[in-house]
Image (cartoon, rainbow, N blue to C red; front, side, top):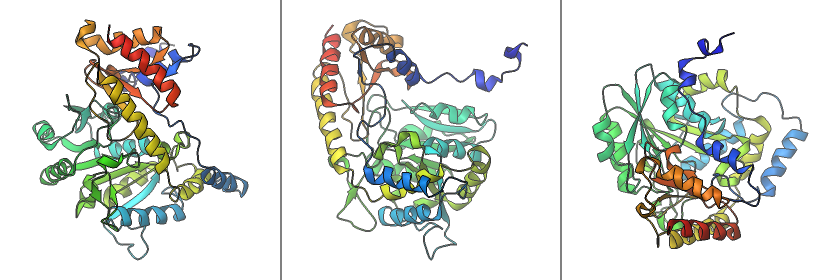
Length: 403
């Protein structure tokens, strides 16, 4: 059988994840310092795991509703009302609300469902460059195109940078703050300008906020709806009437260390949410049932101590590396997107890969910039690793960057 004649052009056009490639290489290296994987290194709080175990033991292992268990949907609706002021249809007393929400199979599940609900062949979605690794394929899977918006050198996705890329085929703009791979947090004005642009041009603004809880204190500048004294990460969803334009995507994996549970949620215009739920019925059926009972408890768990620890690590990374190269200060998440110094003499189109190879020889793992970008001038470092290993890794990176 000639399988090459049968495999779709769509499948052939998709590369394997560059992050997983690093993961495979690292599996063969003893005593390594892994600064590559975007996975929290803290233990999942007992309250969360205990709730999931109870759900399994109590027989909650069958199909739930496609849109998620009622208890979690209502709790999410109340949390969103307090945080950003949205009154979704899952909020008691608001069944006819113009916005809705549902539980998804991870935030990646929400991103895929949004693409399939919005994009026809030949349509366009604008994504930031550098990007989270799925973003370019949000177009590919829908036979559409992902248009890259360069955010170099400060990694800020602004309306000024986005607007020239809009065409009659554009339907959606993807926005990510705090961002992966750079950890950059957008300002309130940048969020508002992008929202205003999408409103004027009749575009959905998908705000991917998987790292919203991992925003460091200095960058928490926008008040919540319920408590103006409480400050959170700026978001286009926080402005009046945003629920008619913004598709908000958030999740549990990064905040609570349950990345393998594959649980997220989406909220936004009711008609779009209904279309996404319809597709979830066939693609994912539902998010994992007993684990939904686990994250129901997560919403009451305070993770601020962990966030403060990651902020300490962030400051260490910036302090050490800014002495030898350019490092935009991360305002959230647990990444830094670091420039490979010109002094090393690498060609710009392969600097990240060459630097990666030198680091592998020193048993330190980072991810080349080409994994996240049309360029390869940078590399991504994850500081979701114990401080002792982080310090060892930084020693190596500084020494290699000094040449």
